[in-house]
Image (tube, helix red, strand yellow):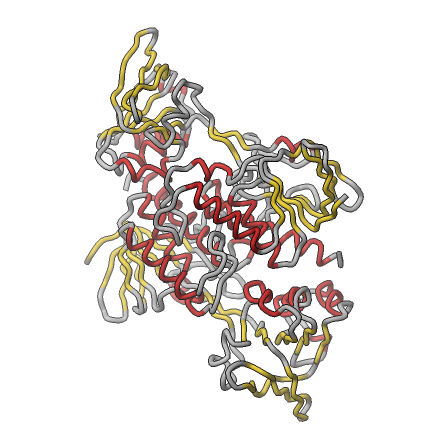
Amino acid sequence: MEEYDLIIVGSGPAGYAAGIYATRFNMKTILIGKESGGQVSESYRIENYPGFSMINGMDLATKFKEHAESLGVETMDFLEVAEIEKTENGFNVKTEDDIGYFGRTLIFATGAKKRKLGLLNEDKFRGRGVSYCATCDGVFFKDKTVSVIGGGDSAVASALLLSEYAKKVYLIYRREKKKMRAMPVWIERAENNKKIEMILESVPKELKGEEKLESVILDQNGKNIEIKLDGLFIEIGTDPESELAKKLGVSVDAKEYIKVNEDMSTNVPKVFAAGDVTTGSNMLAQIVTACAEGAIAAESAYKYLKKRGI
Amino acid sequence: MEEYDLIIVGSGPAGYAAGIYATRFNMKTILIGKESGGQVSESYRIENYPGFSMINGMDLATKFKEHAESLGVETMDFLEVAEIEKTENGFNVKTEDDIGYFGRTLIFATGAKKRKLGLLNEDKFRGRGVSYCATCDGVFFKDKTVSVIGGGDSAVASALLLSEYAKKVYLIYRREKKKMRAMPVWIERAENNKKIEMILESVPKELKGEEKLESVILDQNGKNIEIKLDGLFIEIGTDPESELAKKLGVSVDAKEYIKVNEDMSTNVPKVFAAGDVTTGSNMLAQIVTACAEGAIAAESAYKYLKKRGI
């Protein structure tokens, strides 16, 4: 079995950045990811990764990957990790094609997935009106009409942020107002905001449009209503991909995010984590914060081995 | 006096990234910095900022600045902040040219300065053999001979890291071994490393070379010795630029770094901090970690105002 100082699971910004830094520490490193680029590669346009005023998500993901590879990181994309087994000195990582890799340390950079509504056309309109990140895409909706779906903190905070740009923001929630999980202070701010209108007890049923999203049909207590809009922000939750880590005994929080210390270590020795799958960066899940966590995790893995003379 | 939602003090990566994110939150933002680009602009070549396989420091600093400006951040470079006064609703920031700016929130991104030996030619050889960051520049010294000056954790850890690349590493310390402040485990690793040779009770006196650094003259108990080398890493400490923050009552640690919480807030309400001047990112002072801290600080400043309906 091929031996590595570090195995990185996940091929988004956190994983590639961890790889870039691991090579600076001269660690023999392999990165295994089931996609290439993670959520980034699905982004239509990115304006908030410092250094690139505007770049397509796929292009940025490619840059990250090429950067890591140019420094010597082995990358295995579109390959899923099937199983990780703890051994005395590290971990045996087995991929779905039944090949094994031994790693002295591990970094989980497996990311998170935004929950989808599950409607027809949702994927088709992604980047054409449908978004899962107001911080990323809100600025593209200046003086437009948008909706946010959801009732948690992210949904209400997104509505507030969108009100800075859009001329009208509908906040659509499936139940009554008192069932909203968002902090009261956020809900109060939304109610006091003249641009924001709450549409309660309404469930999205259909997304309509030709080339891009034009309206959403809601089921409001059995009655159909149509909301014309330019953008729809879906904020109904995020699922961190922490299954593999949990099987190794890594602690997660109530929402399944991997709990990390300041050095990106987890509760399991030699196991580190970085990016959207973690509780790090004050939960600001952005490309640049994922990269920073990757860098910190790589340094911590290096120091772990070095202090023990490995 | 012109009013801003956010005033950023400092014009390195942390400051520009904070500006980029502040505009995403539609905050009216000004950035005031006494240099442009901070330490980055002094870096000869950068290979570890994810997305750029190789870029000159000045070029990357310019990209950060243009990115922030393109999104609407006002920037004032080469202008020093003279004084900051707390008011009821925010801060009056006065620059050295006696102009005042009002900010509802503040981010200190004032950076840190590596201590210099203070030798003739030290600046001339910077990027031509003299470096202050093994993590950044170590990889450029494959199979070369290098020295590290210092006896603290950074110095010994740098020597260990450099041993991964260089064929020979001299660790030069001005006093006897037992006076070294580095953790015993680091010192032990260095002693057990065949490439590392400690030169004790020796003080650098002169840097010699034509176009680039070729040797260093040490004063070893009154006797001159010359060490031929390709690279000299100066690790004798870092001074965070936290004076202005301290005057506002911001808490710092024993080494004068601004103490930050996970959201980059400080002990003083409405005052945030980011980058090398802080205790954040597990003290891994890198461009990408500074940027991430800037993004988090900007979001926190935004949330602070938003929760209060400001």
